Length: 116
Image 1 (cartoon, rainbow, N blue to C red):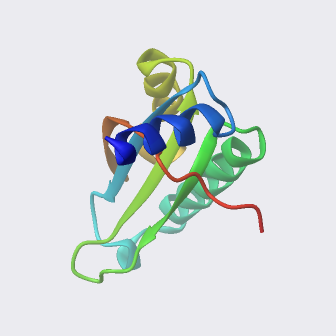
Image 2 (tube, rainbow, N blue to C red):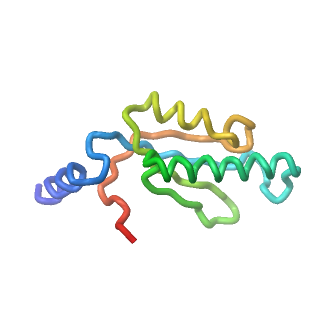
């Protein structure tokens, strides 16, 4: 009971309280080392896109899974609803180009990132 109460308090006190969180799992559809120059540029645009989301507060946290056998990125979006999360995902250049496949799930952000 105390743990559940703590999680509720953390969620209400978190930045962006009232917003919903969604976990995006982004996985490459092909070996990244074999991308053409045009595909590499699309991947750079993907990174720029995620940086912009972070700077405007829609990307709460995220990073790359360091597993050579199953590369992926995990991103937590902070948005109004699932429809907005899907629009954000649809705007990702690597997803649009088919270089990344994505899975989206509702996510409870119990422990938000700390201030540096």
